[in-house]
Figure 1 (cartoon, rainbow, N blue to C red):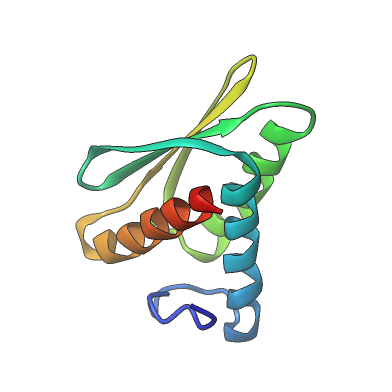
Figure 2 (cartoon, rainbow, N blue to C red; figure 1 turned 90 degrees about the vertical axis):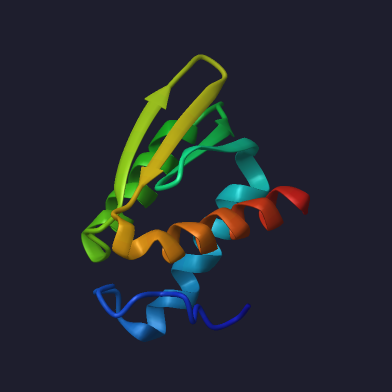
Length: 110
C-alpha cells in the first residue's frame, strides 16, 4: 500500500507527509516488533525490542503521531529488553487501528 487510503479525514498531517509517516511505522515494525496482541477491540499492544535508543524512538514517533491524530492514545512501558506500546482509539477510529495492526503484522513478517 503506497497510499494510506485508510488515513481518516481527522488526521492533521499534510497529505504529502502521510506516506513518510507510514514508512516510519513500517520501519519500526520491521526493526523492532517482537510480538503484537489485541487485549481489547479498541486496543493494540506491540512489544518492541529494546536496546540503545529504542524507547526514545518509540516516544518520539508516538508524540508526532498524537500531534496530528489526536484520536490515538499511546501508553509506553519501557523495560530492560523491551518497550511495550499500547495504542488505543475510540470506536469511530476502529478501522484505523485495524489497518495499523495489519501493517504491524506485515512488518513483522519481513
